[in-house]
Amino acid sequence: MNFIRFKDKPGRAPYKQGREFMSKKTIFKPSRRDVLKYSAAGAAATVLSTPFVHRTWAQTTEINMLAWYGHGEADIVGAYEEANNVKFKPKYYAGGDNMLALIAQSPPGTYDVILSDGEFVQQLNAAGYIDELNPADYNFDDMLHEDFTNFPGHWAAGKLHSVMVRCGHLGVSYNTNAVSAEEAASYACFWKPEIQGKVGHFDWHLPSLGMMSLKNGNGAGLWDLDDAAWNAVQETTMSLRSQVGGFFDYGGTFNSLKNGEMQAMCGIGDWITGVLEKDGAPVASVVPKEGGIQWTESYCIGKGSDKADQVKHFIQYMTSPEGQVKSAQMAAYPGFAITKGGRKLLNEVDPKEAQRTGQVDGMANDPITLIKEGRIHYRDIPQQQSLEDWNDFWSEYKNA
Image (cartoon, rainbow, N blue to C red; front, side, top):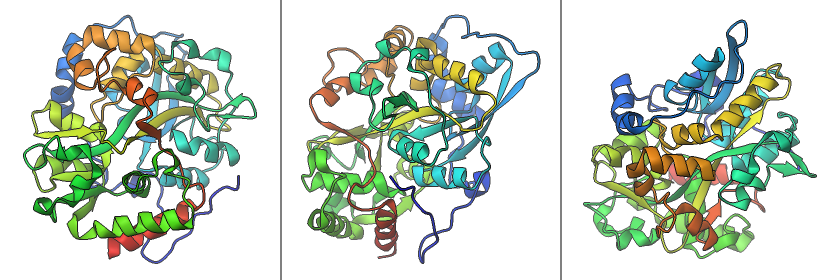
């Protein structure tokens, strides 16, 4: 597979590196009070085992992390840092395209640990940006689903390059005072006349265009579109444009749903509405009848890192029951536990959150049940078009 080339085009903002790319509006950073408030219930109930201690290095080791916002914050890594005498230095991005660009612009060894959206691991591997991993180092027998062990793109020629650590589902996200549960059971609710001008998009092409593809009935083939199907997805998307009131980054998506400016949001799921819902906002996310999309986050060891041993141990920690509970309760955005041990501990220490997200055996909205029923499709990259094709159309759509 050829690695994607990045170049500026009219209507497309150039990529910038690091926090410079992340303006203050781009990433919602909860205050210390917000973090305490959103995680207080789980933290108070969570009495976890002694921190996952590997060994204490003589001097504090700095580990450079490239990730979505939240993964390098104290609620996730604080206890691990203290127990292992390490300090994470995170650089945050939004969207796999930006992640690839940041790595391409950086010398080898810049990032020790890379959190990648699952569908982008194959690009990282093809470009030589990540190291091979030893499967024996990770407890794959504890995964809740076989796909989580053999996740598409994580393996190449029988060699492992990334380990899945969390996931979540994307579907219809809506204000429960403006859209009923029955209406939210289909992507067609985005076209509801009463919410014209109050439909928003999370500003990344993959999730929104994937949802439009599902609305068109493409099902499991939603990413593998021939010319006719791709044209139809573009037509469906353009037909929604008059309903759209804005395109938002993380912070904008969060705030526009919180204040009611937007009453439905395309391209997201519980990873945003869950934070608001736990705070009492009238919002929810559901997987509609046309199907939902799974976002998948995985850890890789950066090529050229001299801290591979520490990173391996950190990945082991994040897939341990303790790490999985911290991940599920993440203050920045919640996710699903992907291991049996993680789910079991979550139900013990935070049963309210387990119930809220369906992470209980036998619940109708159990994430694993939805996968087994074929209602969830793993987010991927376009198969017959390039990412640049989709991004170019996205720019055209936004400017229409």
